[in-house]
Length: 328
Ligand code: ADP
Image (cartoon, rainbow, N blue to C red):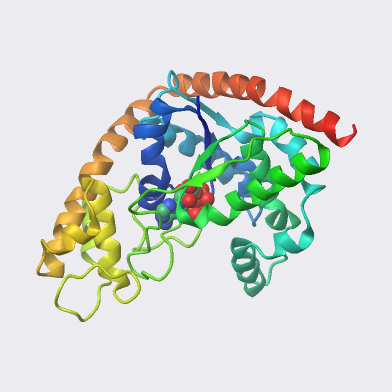
């Protein structure tokens, strides 16, 4: 059976981008068709200036929202990265096959490091090595497929490179994974700035729809989305990024294609109105399940405890084999 692994960083409140780009497929497709693991990757939240209490609170909220998005612990394994030591054990070995030049070329590192420097802060070494830890997250489980948004493509590529290199040098140890992306909404853009991604780790603002936003907040954010001075509704990501983003969001919510939808609208007002209502409907069941789960915290504790036990059992033999192969 295909092994699937993916994760979410608890660096902020989960967004519509996280949901449409990744989480929804995990719940609707991957957990049913594959042997799947989904992880709150809390160690990755320590790569930039962080508040310990906030990381703990967000890890819990992220785990609860994974379950609220429809992940069923009977169908897949849900756990928290720091509860399974195999990730950091393997990460060190992979640092010994990664080169510093290839880490410095990572686009996310360059962007985030530049931001930290502008703020006058120092750049944590873990920000540079974060994709190696992510490679360990993936490779420890013999993962075949990593369902992620577009922004993670380069990091999954690195995991592939490290797996191939390790196998060549030390004997076959790791499955070489591949990224899979959704056909539509692989990169949901900020509603106020359609040239940048709708990301939870960036600043909050009216351009980001959060999974727990009330319906009226969602409506307001979508209705105020930046479009352009054009009068026709055309799907063109390069030339018309604002309307294209709305078309992608609506298409993803309704399971249609943005090209097909663009022909159905003659004004931005109507497109925004339908997009807002479609998003409200997509979020409704997630928010309802989230409320129920918050009322039953012991259930979430139990799911995470069982999940980390299962994950540890799955990862340990391969990580032990990697230690032997590399000469320890
Ligand atoms: P973030 O960038 O929001 O901190 P994470 O790194 O925790 O997100 O990503 C969790 C998953 O959500 C990843 O698979 C990532 O590719 C996906 N994702 C994040 N933002 C978006 C977006 N704007 N559009 C599509 N997918 C996204």
